[in-house]
Length: 306
Length: 306
Image (tube, rainbow over all chains, first blue to last red):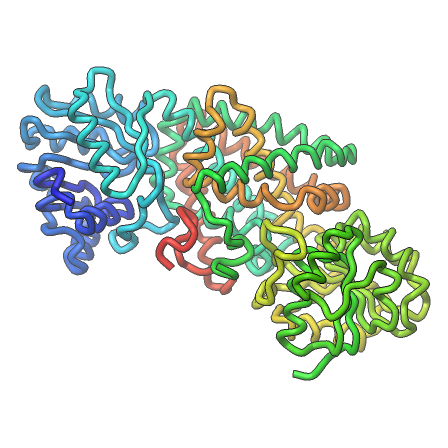
């Protein structure tokens, strides 16, 4: 493959930036990748493992001469980072983010954007519960979706080049508006995360069941919740603070449905329960058919049979 | 290893029975394993793949001469199966179940138990979202927990022999009372399942987000919910109908906690959210340290880096 951008700057050196750097290298998608992080420890680790061609001390330094700048920081930090790098951006450069919400990122970032620089929102829907510069791997985005969210006045050529970049990173791309993006993510990601966090907290609070019981017997269902609930606390705090309306709407619907199932349990309405469970099974089948998961039974334990 | 039981009869031929048969064979834990299922299709498949030494047409036939009878049927069917096999049980035999609830199984099974036959509740905490005679594998129970729930008047020798059997199947064992068992399982398994079912249903109902969007973008969080929610509907209906009180108690606590987090989202209380998410992360660390899971990041996708 040929390089799509000459110089790419990664701001923030966590799971996403680390995986991006390795995927760019794998595909030969840029002549040079520079990175930076606010934490000196992260910069030191990134240097030590050779994560990028160059690790800069500041974001302003990192963006100098970059054709593509990728903001890989928590959603709550996007505005401040954009304000910091704005004076150093190359005319004609493209800036994108990788945040999990879009309306709030637009509101934070666009006011600081220089006239001659492009911004396009991006949301690669891939992750693990690990974070930090050592957690990245080149395959993270392979066959995952990257949602591309252009501002209304976006340059079609810029959007198309950026989409091609993500496709060569390994991802599938599709475009949507910021508000639709935020609703879709509230359903498939944000509300499920808050629910998993809640259930793990409940288990921990319950005096009559010991922590070691919770921990030892977590295989059948609860284990997946703890995996979700181990995700980066700062990132998720920012997601909820910045996608408040859609998250609250989905949680409201969730509570309604849960109350209906709870009533069926209380009233012993087995038919209601059976029909509901049967319906959700179909959705799972749809996910398997769409190729977003494997059929290997790993929920009892990772790799048991695969 | 030497056989612990001469003849083992498996009633029901789903994931658990299939895996048991293969694990018994792997360990040489019985001279003979016979099986049966109500469905003639399941019996035919089990015969075809040679799952047991012998597949019988009826449960009554299967238990003849068996030293250990394992009831691998949904919780709601335990009482009827016990009534059916009671006349054919060998004096001195042990009957156990593998159900996910225990108080209700005791209530259903014990009234039919002949005087000279022992019953001990068992709950191997292992599973996948697959079911049927072809879904079993010998490693399913390896390093998982099997909760042993003896009735009050249990024969210590019988319980000890059965515990040894499960240990050689590959599981860790521990004893608890039926009521404590049901509470622990409501926390670590039953409530999380109902919650996952609910969230998958909500996603499906939401008109403004299409099914294909839900399906395509499920990687980040929602995928684990659909995996849980794809479990056998009959089994789970019976679990909720038979562990009603503990499940409702845990759901009540869950709703309280969720409302508190929801309020924090609404009020923009980032500190509350951060502290909560940080605490749940610790519980996850506890699970890793207890060896009940691997650190391989498989929640973005199975086997991505492992």
